[in-house]
Image (cartoon, rainbow, N blue to C red; front, top):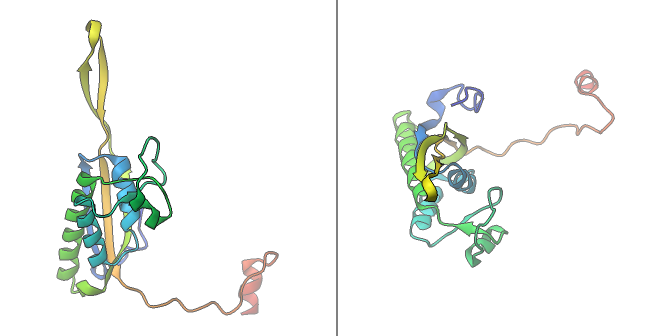
Length: 179
C-alpha cells in the first residue's frame, strides 16, 4: 500500500475503522468499480448493497473499465447502461467491511454512525502462469490481483460555509490579509 494514499484520514487511527488486504487474488478492475459504487455509503447500506450484488439483485455500474461490458436495465438507477455483478469482488469487499467494522467497535465508535469514507484499490504485481496453445506455442496467462485499503469514519456534521468566496482574480494571500 502506498503511504500517501489517505494520510489525512489516518492521523488519529482511534477515530476511524481501518482494514486492508494485500495481494488479494481478485480482479483489480472489477474490484475498483465495486469499491467506487460503495464509497460514501453508510456502513449498513454498503453491506446490504454488496449482499444484493452477490444475489444479483443490484448491479455494480461500470464507468471506467467498461469495455465489452454488457448492458443491463438495473444500471439505469446509477445513470449508466453498463454493469455487472462481480461476486468475488463483492465477497472480498464485504469481508474487509466487516473487519473494519470490528476494528471500529474496538476503537469505541458507534457502528450505526459509520460511513465508508475511503476505499483505495491498487494493482498488485501480476501473477504469471502459462497456457499451452496449438502447434507447440505457449502464451502468458496472468492474474491481476490488487491491494485494498478501506476506511470507515463517523458521519460528519455539515461543513460550515466559508465567509467570503474567492473570486478568480484574487490570490489567497490577499484574502488572508483582509480577514
